[in-house]
Image (cartoon, rainbow, N blue to C red; front, side, top):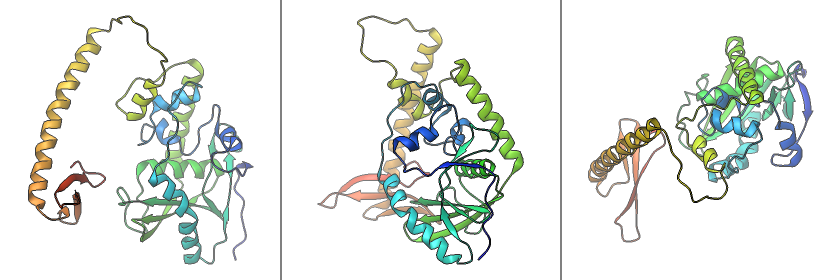
Length: 295
């Protein structure tokens, strides 16, 4: 078995996710591997706006688990064991929360560590954004996470073990990219400076931004608030566009549902577009899109 070469990062400790100790290790003015994609404006779960409020100690929506998160956590040790079975020459170890040896604010909590490399474990219902097994094609937000982990720990390679749809096992190899890491570090430092100086990011269209705005005010005063002509016009235009898009979406749904008939899935080539759910009597309940499509 290959000798274990420790990373150059500083191990802060091994914490159970969700505990106070775990939260403390990730709190304050630091950027973790799961946050760097939000800093870059590339996260599907958080925005620069929502992360800024979190780092500034302002109200943010509470984290709510869902089946994807639950089963991702449940399956992590199973997928990690599959990787270990495929690579008996590598000693796979659990790890903890790390910081960069020089940059105390740079944090990462990789899933596993194996000799001189990291191993990340992921699950995906449909595999959207993932390339063929053996490639380095990851969704951009996971690539950010992996590069941040490698940069934090001072390592050069990360293996990603992925389970798609509960049965399709794949592996990816991502090498450290110094240029990408430098860009992310610069963006993270600028972001943290904005937090210190109170420079709030602009409001964008991310749902995380809207949900963060929702939890800021508490209570209601019986008063009118004058808004700008620009904000009023922007809202009116967006509402009109939404109604028009909703009408077009209903038409597109009708076309697909009509084409499916008594079938189950709508496909185009090797792409699944949408699927039909039914009531107990066999009539249509709904047309559901596959991830990455709009049905």
